[in-house]
Image (cartoon, rainbow, N blue to C red; front, side):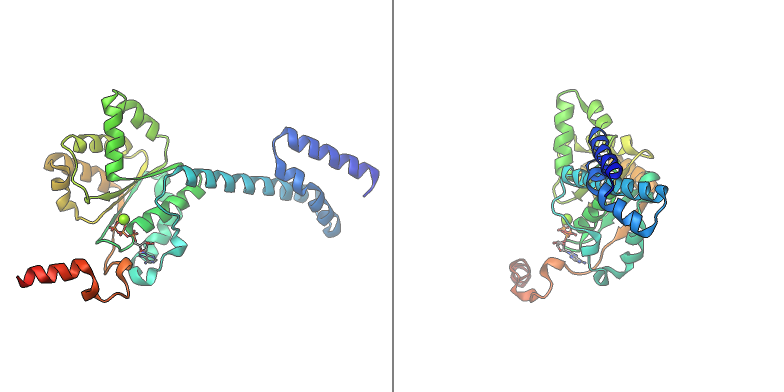
Length: 264
Ligand SMILES: Nc1ncnc2c1ncn2[C@@H]1O[C@H](COP(=O)(O)OP(=O)(O)OP(=O)(O)O)[C@@H](O)[C@H]1O
Ligand SMILES: [Mg+2]
């Protein structure tokens, strides 16, 4: 390397550190050599160096958003076997592109236990984080606890405003646990605060017709469902539980118990 080139490189490394752009410092020399060998233009070299910095920043941003999301497990859409839910392959591929987030549309995943609702919701949450959206994942009961807590402290409006900064909230497992009396109102406020503003993903083992009983309030549940499904993809998963695949049905305690009960 000529004297002037090494001086220039030192200056690039110094300036990159002042800009807090460590990847520029790391790759400036290596890419300069490649550029000389392959006769890149100055613009091509600059673009290549900056591209490294931007790619690394995006990746670490996504990683931070994924870690902050509170996902139950790290399950991606690539890990999902769509041969078992073949009707969902197309819709899920479209959702993974993320335009539903810009349009503040919702996703509702319905289906029996173990069919992959939480997995798909998690996969979409990870994809959203990669696309630059802040994401928060919790079960319906956890959301109710969080909102009740805020309500008790007279902070509900502030909490909803804080949640509005998230591009995506996932509400998993609507329907497994019955809610307290005032949960329907809190949930309604959450849904209504995001209506046509930002996306929700909900999963449930129950059809919408059973939500009134879960929320113990038919009127509020109906108004809530109305807002959720107005702009939403509603996808239904089918089949047997993936958790129990390859297991003899009769060997399962719950099934054996049901059979015994029905005999008696
Ligand atoms: N099609 C699939 N391909 C790969 N893994 C799957 C598939 N379906 C389910 N699984 C896996 O099976 C397990 C159960 O799936 P998941 O938790 O998503 O089910 P669920 O529909 O949310 O069930 P529940 O209603 O009981 O919460 C998970 O470990 C998930 O990763
Ligand atoms: Mg689940």
